[in-house]
Image (cartoon, rainbow, N blue to C red; front, side):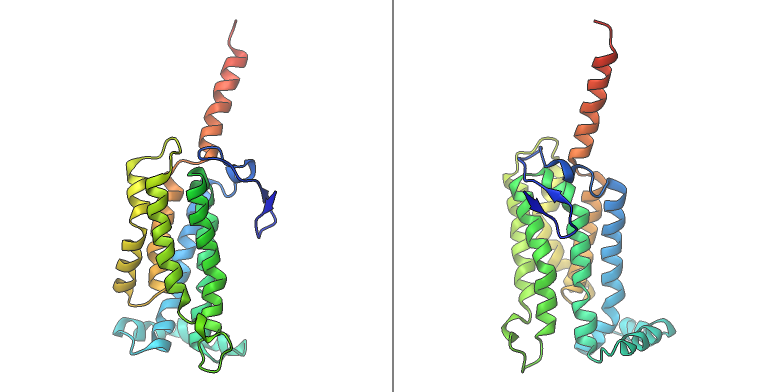
Amino acid sequence: MLSWPTGIPFTTGTAGEPAADMRAHPNRSWSIVFAILAGAWALFLLPPQLLAWYDAPAWAIARDRSDFYRAVHKFVVGLRLHDDYLAFGSAISISMVLLWWSTGPAMTWLGWTGRVFSTILLLLAPLTFLSYLNHADSSPLRFLWGSEGLGLIVLGVAGILAAVVTRAPLVRAWQRVLLAATLPMEVAFTMLLGYWPHGTVVGLALQACLLAAFAPRAADALSSREKLRRQKSVSPH
């Protein structure tokens, strides 16, 4: 018996037969909501993070100078967080947890390859936090700075593995292509938005939305089986 960080227990299962607790947590609607929140949070953090990192593009400067972001900076300072690079960088870990949670049912349906993908996605959250926490030259774990980049590459490889190896039922060609394209999507959104992991996470959030909305999950199959069972139970013999 394993347990999620949320305290919800689950047991591992084979492809197409995930554990009982993964069948409905979260449901499809909430999975989509969490994926959208993950992307929105990454976009929210991006302008001040770009300014903290290097000469930001004009759009990021304009956003960061808006009244809204002035209030955000004032709030962050009120929390006694005076390192914007650390504050707005490490906070992207929240998006990674949201992505893991939103894609859990769809990835578990794929079997062990999907669970590998989910595990890497979850581990990216503390790894990214530690990376930003140790960005200073005097940090004891300075070698971790930037390590989330390697983690994102490994996640892309895990996507290819899940796309090629899974034998779970109901998996369509588009889902395999989407998973196999994890790494190219990461690269594309990083280049488009000019920063990783924040820009990268926006691409992963788009992927998560599609998986949450359309990918097969145990709840769908079990619902169909339950309907069939009930029909058989009430049909005349």
